[in-house]
Length: 517
Image 1 (cartoon, helix red, strand yellow):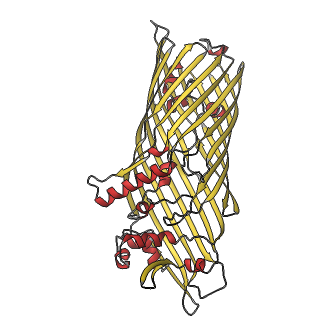
Image 2 (cartoon, helix red, strand yellow; image 1 turned 90 degrees about the vertical axis):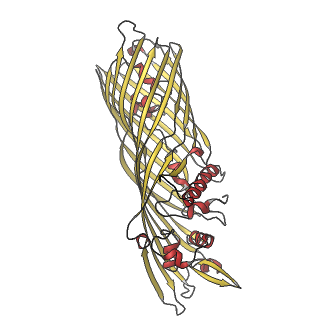
Image 3 (cartoon, one colour; image 1 turned 180 degrees about the vertical axis):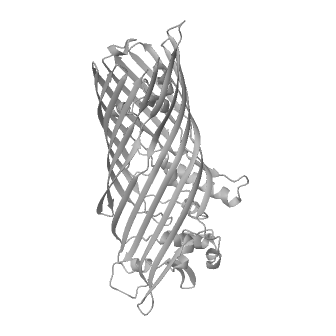
C-alpha cells in the first residue's frame, strides 16, 4: 500500500477525538436506504417517483402524488463479516434493527387546471446503519501497532516530560505509550532514537501475535421536509431540506503479544482499548426535476449539496503493557487517557461537510396512463456520482489556533490524497399482476480509494413483492449486500501499512405498510 506522507498531521496534536480520514468515508460510502418497494428495485428513484423515498433521492418524484399517503418502513439488518488479515481468516456476525423512509405525503390538485398540482412531505429515515462487529487475528513479522506512537513522538520535537504532563497534546497515543514503557528512547551509536518494545521481537526475526476487535453502533438519521410541483404533467420539480442527525459509537480493543518463549527480549504483551463517540446534526439540500417527453418515458436529474454538520467527538482510551525486565520478570503498567486530560473524557467540536452527489436517471413505464391501476410494469436505471474526496473538516472555535489550522489543513489534504469520486449504478423493475407486484433490482457502488491495492466495492441483489388494494398497501423486500472493504488496525508513515480485507455478506429485510387517503 502507498505510504501516506501527510499522516503526521493526523497523528500529531490529538487533543480529543481527533478526526481521521475514515471519518470522511464513513458519512458518504454506504448503500442507499429506501422503502421496501424501493429497495426491491435496486434503489432506483431518480426518475420514478410515487414513493416517499423520492424525498431523499429526487424530490421531484413527489409531484406524482394527487392524494395523501402515510407509510411506515421497519426493517432488520443481518450482518456477517469474513476478515482476512495476513492470511488468517475470521468470521463474525451481528444483527440489528433499522427502518427505511417513513412519514406523510399530501398531494394537492388544481381544480382549474388538472395538469398542475403540488405535494408536500415530512419524512424520516435511517440513512446509514453503523451496527457492525469486526474481529481478526494473525501473526505479524513486519510491523507493530506501537510504531505509530514511536513515529509520532520522534517527529513531534517534544521531550518526554512535555508529553507526560497534564493536558498532554498526545493523551491517546504517545503519552500512554511512554507512561507504560511501550515506547522509550534508546541510544544507537551517538544518536537517540525512539523505539517500541515490540520492535525488539521483530528485530530478532520473530513474529508478534496481533488481534483486533472493533464493535460499532449507531447510524445517520435524516428528517426531510420536501415540496414538489407538477407543471402540465411534463415538468416536475422539487426540493428537500434535510436535517441529518449523526450518532456513532465504537469500541476498539487491540492486543499484541510475544510469540516466543524468550523472557529476556523486553516485551511480553499490551492491550489498547479505545472508546469513541460522535454525535451532531447538520443541514443539506436536495434539488431535482423529472421531464416526461412522452407519457411512458421519464428522465430525471437530482443534485445533493454537501451535508454541513456540526459534530462533537468524545474519546477515552486505556493501555495495559507488560514488559520484561533484565532479570526476566514481568513489569505491568496501566494508564487511562484521562490521566492526561484532567480526569475528563477528551472532547472535540468541529465542522464537517460530506461530499456532494449528482444523479441522472431514466424510466420506461409500460402502459403509462393517468389511472395508475392500468400500469403494468416499469424498468428504471440510475447513475450516481459521489465526490468522496470532497469531505472537509474545520475547527468549531471562533478563533482557531495555528496548531488547529495546520491540523485541519493536513487532514483535508490527506482526504484529497487517498479518496476519489466514484460512480454508482442501479437498475430495477416491477411487474404488476392486478393487486400483486413482483420486483427485482441490482446496484453497484464503486471503489472510493485511489490506492489500487485497496479493492473495495458493493454489489446489491434485491427482490420483493407488493400488494395494493382499496387504499392499503404492503411491500416486502430482501437485499443481499456483498461488500469488499479494508480495515487498517494502525497507520504508519515510514513504511507501507498492513490491513485486513473484509468481505461483508449482509442481508436486509424491509417491510413497508401504508394507507392512501
